[in-house]
Length: 488
Image 1 (cartoon, rainbow, N blue to C red):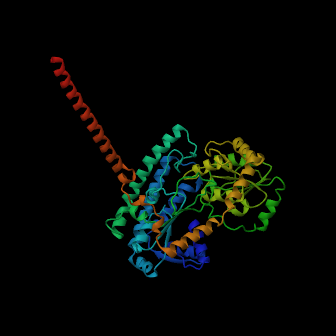
Image 2: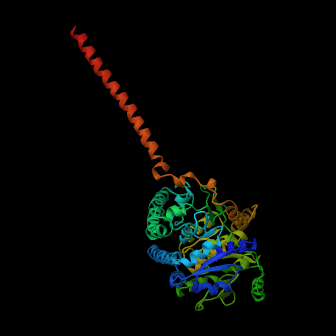
Image 3: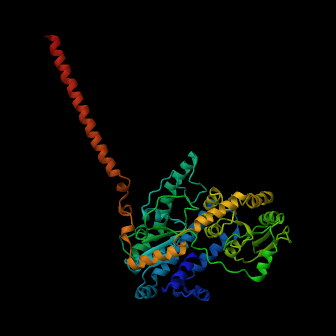
């Protein structure tokens, strides 16, 4: 969705944007066309299998266990690898891309094939990555950025930049073990493709390290400050579109809320429903509110639904509702896009994170005073009701949301304008090697100064050895001299 918005912005600037899709999805894409051209290849059903896996894991709102999340990620990673293999093996498709002489390749590192395709077409074609975070942790080595583990929390946790001793220990262990495992896993899947289609001397890490520009869906207003490199650009909030008028019937419903206002409830673009037990908890909490509630929900209507104040909708214009002056709070699992829309419009949040980066996003919302965080699996109707009431009635949440919204908006460029400027900068000037840290090219023993440590250890050992030997020699000479004097 975010890459599509970047593509539209580039089309508006006069660029020709081609989107790579499988043959069986191109008809649907053409219906949604935003001035894009489409380049297709035969994926032999892998995209459909990935979509089915996504629906299986994410269609119902529920807290996903670490085991199930790992299992689903492994299946998705394997499916993505097969998808990439079919893409690269389609020689007619690749030749067509080469003849087009593209200026840049833009991709999400969640699908590592983008970096491979850029190198496969031509090493001179720059690669631009857009993401919230790299699940394979390739970007950590590719950017060469230092990570002080004392205050940079691992994205897969709900830690803040103010960690306890135990959390710092956990953070150090996670940052040591998980990236190592993730990089080994992605290497075992993609290194063979890289060596087949790029060079036998290359790996998925090396081609990813050639990425010219990293666009991160972050913003220091919400995320915690951390070290960065010149080719790492923050574009958090890029997804927030221009505000549109609400449909007439929806506007009438919003206006009917009066001074009490509106509560917006949505669990994102993929999560449309939830279990009967959880839906009854939510419905009971909403029914107690004086505010009108617009809830994006697909499924059987909960028995305890507040008929007078709660409206169930299969779809709702989330951004436009959050921008409405009558909106008082936003109930969300804290996906990145939703959080930045709420931040942009200054709406306090009640977060019920489920998986992926949602716990980390919810922790940032709570740490910044933008809202509160609850446990989706165990929250009761009373707890949810009180949490919504708290962010509505406690003026600090509304004031903090308004203040941070002003800070977020007070920029010389919007996040989208900044992203487009940097992409065009890459198109004009190429790979921008002057912005890449030398750390990317250093072997690990030089990066961690182990060669210097060995040299200093050797020097210190030599000096201490010399001093010890000299002292021993002097003692022996003194003992011999003293013995002669006594005998005389």
